[in-house]
Length: 150
Image 1 (cartoon, helix red, strand yellow):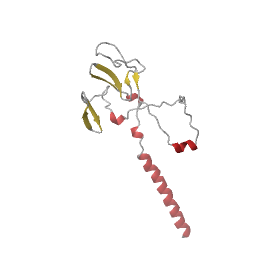
Image 2 (cartoon, helix red, strand yellow):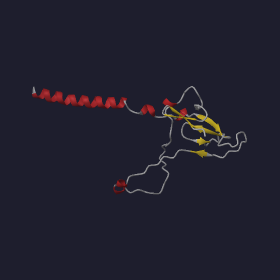
Image 3 (cartoon, rainbow, N blue to C red):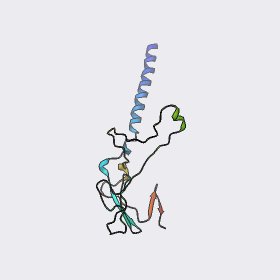
Image 4 (cartoon, rainbow, N blue to C red):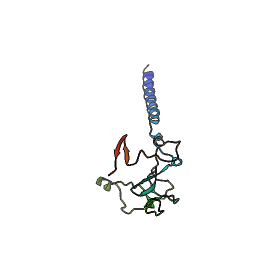
């Protein structure tokens, strides 16, 4: 009888552990990962300037030479922006310096992995080829519209 209680106790913890792993897998954030094939673009124009923007953080053109790239005045064909991208950096707390050597020189990491910002599928309309602006001079943040005209 004693062996049976120990075995039940052991099986209880094993099943609890397995169920925790399965539930954690279901609640992962994998559904928020973006897809490189779902890139969208749009054109924004105002104050005699017209430029292209993308849903992955690039403003202006990209490596394909798309236009307009910061065209001013509109219709002139004169481009003044090549590629404006988001840069993400991290400042480490001082306590980390004791644990590892920090190389203060920036170097490119060539490990074959692409590091880029990709828009999640939940924020785009798959039926459209372009990004739709809400309205001229309107910026929407967390469902609230802000008038950004001067």
